[in-house]
Every structure is written in structure tokens, then in C-alpha cells.
Image (cartoon, rainbow, N blue to C red; front, top):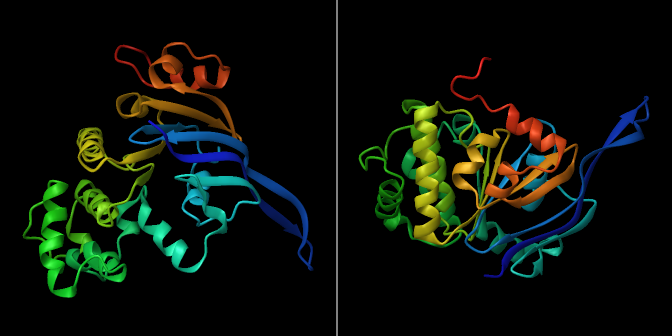
Length: 265
């Protein structure tokens, strides 16, 4: 099983400016030289507390933040040099599910428009095929098929996140990035969405990067795990091995912060 994604010495720095003229005083090193790979068909968990650089790293892979150093390769090709049509093709291959489904969905668009807008833009379906394609997507994420003319505010948080997942898989991506995709959901719905992601991974042969601050979540869905702190990777390896025998103090701290039944708060 080869690598679908290879990240080498990735750096994303943000300038902090001061004074009337806005001269750069220093840089915030949000991502500071991280290296990892994602194998084809694998789920890689990325954990760490808020501000550790998880989301900045994912936005760099999505080409939403511009790195100031390092390389990102998808299927062996460096994506940082992509432009025009090549960049558009890359957008199809890598999709994302964000934390807040209500903010991620355009409130002015119906479910039909949300699910098929990108498909029409990329030429994957004709306008007269939109309804049929949207019904297939709804069935794949366990939503009723009679909601195509409704709007995002009419659904629960779990239903909206299923819509986000359906939209993400509409372009048949190779890589799916889930950035805190279940943290806004209650525990019961969270488990259902995790099961859905695991099912779609097998069905669609997806590779997944699952980003979360909750180390208790990744043990249920991830094959391997990387632990980030202050923009760096402090530990990585097979999920069961890292969680059962952590080597770094920061990893031990994250594990100890997970609530356990019978453990006083």
C-alpha cells in the first residue's frame, strides 16, 4: 500500500505587524517543519489542543493557506506549484468537512443546490441530472430523499453534518479532510457520524485525515495517529501503540484528559 499524501518539512508562518507603517515585528510559527505521510485507504488521526496548528496544516493541504516552506505531494506530485486547470483538478481530489455545519452551508441554497453545485461546475453532471445525483448522495449518508427543496436551517446539527459529508463526497475525492467534524455534535450523533465515515471510507476507497482535539475520538476511527503541539509533531505511530504506550509527556497529558467512567472530575 503506497502513500497518497506526503508532507515534508511543512512550514506555515503568519507575520505580526506593528507600528503605523505595519513593519513585520515577528512571525507566529503556526506549523513549524512537520513531516508525515498518509497511506492509501488509511485514516490518520491528528490530535492536539486548540492552537497547536492542526487546522492550519489542513488548510495548507487544501491550498487555502500558503506555506512558506516544505512540500506537499499528492500521488507523488508537488501540489504547491499547481495553477489554473491543474489546481482545479486537485480541488476535486481533496475535499473537506468543517466543524460547524451551519456555517459551512449556504443558507440561501436548497439541499439540491448545495449537493450539486460543485458537480455541475466541474462537469460531473448535467443540470437535468441534478435531482437524481442528489438523491443518490442523500441515500449514501442516510438522509431521506424528500428534503431536496428544504434549506439548512430546517435541519438538526447531525443532519446538517451529513449534508456536509454528502457534499464532500459528491466529487468522488481521493482524500477527505475532517476538521473537528464531530466536535459540535452530541455523543450519540457523534458516534453515528463516525460510523458513517468509516462506512464511506470502505465503500468509496477514501483516505481520511481526521483532525480533533479529543484523543478519545481517534482511537475509534484512526489507523495511525500524529500528536501536534505548538506547530510541531511530538509523536506519531499506530494508534493502538501510541495510546497504550505513549512516549511523550504531552501525549500522556492528552490521554489523561479523557473522562473515564467512575473517574472523579
